[in-house]
Amino acid sequence: MCNLDITKMKQTIKDILFDYIREKQGIVDYHEITYIILTKTPKSKWNITHWRWYKTQIVSPNGKYHNEFPDYIIKNITNAVIKASVQTKREKVPNLNTQNTSLFINNSINIEKNVAKILGHVTHHIHPEIVTRVTEENKLFEHEFSQKCHPALNIKDYFFEGSDCLFPGIRRPINKEKEDFKQWKNAINEKDGTIFNDNTYPRHIWTYLSLNKGYSGGARGTWAKSGLEAFELAHIFGHKEDEKGLEKKVFKQFNSNLKPYSLFTSVSNVVLIPKGLTKPTDHMDIIKICFYKRHLDLYGNNLIGLDAFDESLIPEWYNEIKWLDPILPFDWKDKIDNVLKYRNKHLIEKYSK
Image 1 (cartoon, rainbow, N blue to C red):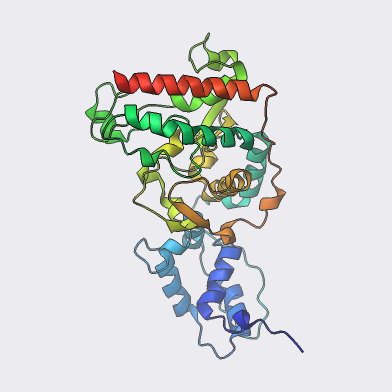
Image 2: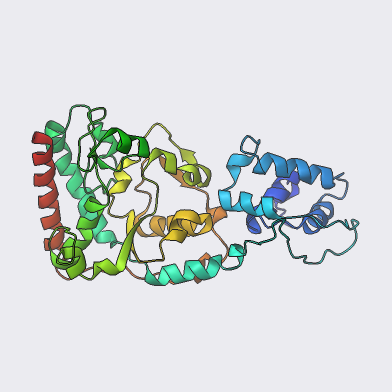
């Protein structure tokens, strides 16, 4: 007996269209999708009006389907222009090059795979065994920290199942908070008990692994002596509330009530990338999605407020990326113990002043 795929038999036009959009990463060829829809649903009245309605509902910020697609797909849909001639149902649809209304065409879509492959070759992630060690230590440190930290601090923003936050209580301020504090760096925010910082604290894990010493800047500091000055830090998942736009779209379960501050010094969330190559991880959604996938493959889901990653958004060429293997120094246990001792003592003293 023939086994029929009931789900495919019951596919709606919307299902067919959305599957096509995801597969093509938003580079929609109207003639091609028309041919596909009319082949699968020959009685359909699908036409250009229907596509324009769906397109509006996807690209408009208030559209019905806007939140179902990441920004890079929405941009690709927005930039696509339908050619004037519309083919009939039975004509074979050729591959047509998409066009752009701008005089200066954004060709980044053509190099995204190459960019991702380059970054895979040069990006250093923390080894999973180190992440596990920090996570286990956090379970022991939570009680002591809760007795000493600022009374306004919500420690559950930093201590939760799977948290590998190295410096609980630390976060980056938003611009308005910087304006309110004349000297904001390392200041305690009395409103929520957090400590404002730049990228000093996330750097400690790397200098300890390199030199078994804490971070210090300048020509004679540990960052320079260790050779780390050739790199920049990049956060994979956003650690500010206003940086979670993409996460909302690629994780089917998103809890907006939880603060993402722990991700600022999460050892698994901070990677080393050679100078000049970090911008794609900030501004190219498809690259960010690749790094999301890499994080989940290495560490599992140890994130706060994010669950059910939408695997359908991963580019089809993802498996072509050859990621750099995380390094595990032979004396890593001693170095991690030392950075944990430093953080415990440092934070208790900081909050005791």
